[in-house]
Image (cartoon, rainbow, N blue to C red; front, side, top):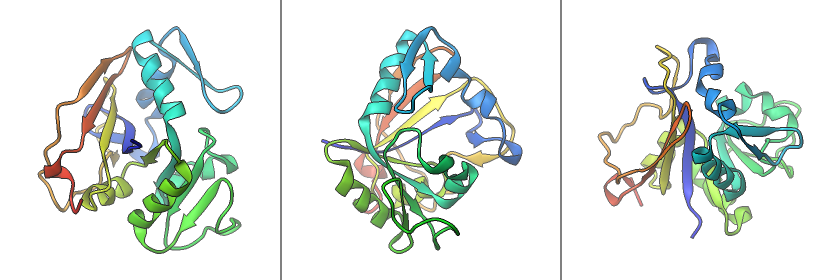
Length: 204
């Protein structure tokens, strides 16, 4: 059964970006730390990871059928140059359509009403039997509070950034408890896949 999951590379002190939106050379060092090449959906782009991480990365690349992200992530990535590297449709939760962009296209749909819940429902409609990825930050928090998430996937890296953007923005419903994680020990990363239990499923 398809799952709704949020996923990010996270520093030991809980950040997905450092000061001034930096620190990515540390957060994603694991993506180039191994000898196993895993192609992405974008020609010319691939991961080079440890054998342990390779299966996890393949599942990530091929397992998602649509993504839901926030406007901050969309703007911070400059719209991924017009198409997300995973080559799936991306639903952007926002108050308004960015200037110069169509409200809906094969690449991006700007969801201006109904918030994360509406975006996830629209993503499910196009993802078929594949998973839905939810971006970190505010949208991850709202998805948790709405009871929309099935999994939390953390790519924990051996660095601390000191300050920056947190993986999940401040929760109004904390503390939340999750199930025991699946643990995959890679090189320069530990992948943790936490199931969302009934006690952490918000309004589900």
